[in-house]
Image: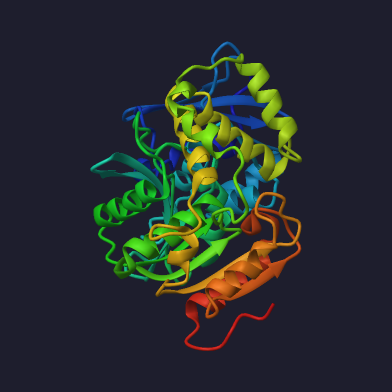
Length: 395
């Protein structure tokens, strides 16, 4: 194996461990240069080494690009993240470590730079990607079912010039704690968000949530309105309004059964990539990687099934019903809907308008993840809404 390209050596020499988070203190990152081969950057505590890749050793994350892209990454402090967002650099297997490597080798010492880390809370560690001025108004972002903070990396970057942006892995997902037997219902997640904010010194914040994360953001608004400034729901999951015919059966199912993996790993992975449109390339492939990282762990499966169960069983009416409490929501809110969303159909927009006449709405030509599928329109609308004193977002 020839010596590694100069750019890889330069990147590894400027590695700053304060912007990097390896939960076990160890990580093997495979850096692939299309024309030249692959090298592993190995982190073991304070020791770091760049060595030829060995196929028998499974890396924790893979970063793949051609030599020209790697050269741009080496010259430009923001080159790595820009190349990743534009698809010129692929990060696979573990986004927390892969993006952490880009952040740690950017050469930036700006307090507003991107960092990957974790925060100790009463529940356990919660993983976070943060950027922006530490003294700016915070915006906390919450992912959907089976997702991670990785789905909000473009939003973290898009808002970081004006806000302190923080995207977290909710408990049970990604790199955060996965307590066995936890409820994994909206009330549990809302309390976890407040624990995170307490531990990170955040008194109140704007909340942005996608899908299940949007439901959690609303739950924080219902239960802890003093902790919330404004709420943005990106294809937020509401409670079903029609009859849930399978509810009696679902109530009897125990999510702890997820501790058992009945299907072999290759079968699970193949199903996930076939189920998700475009699951073998681009952001969809990264999302499947992130889902599998948690789902292939017993605790992650149990958390997934518990959260899915509560989404289906979410009560629509009554004192603790979703729609009852939505009608009394005190905080300004923006709901972004995808006209091609198959998971949260846009028909729900009418019901939200009826329950919450003061809310703002935006309909986009996208599916269930607006911040990835229509990032320009989504982020422009979010910026207007969070900075607005009056007026409405144009549909």
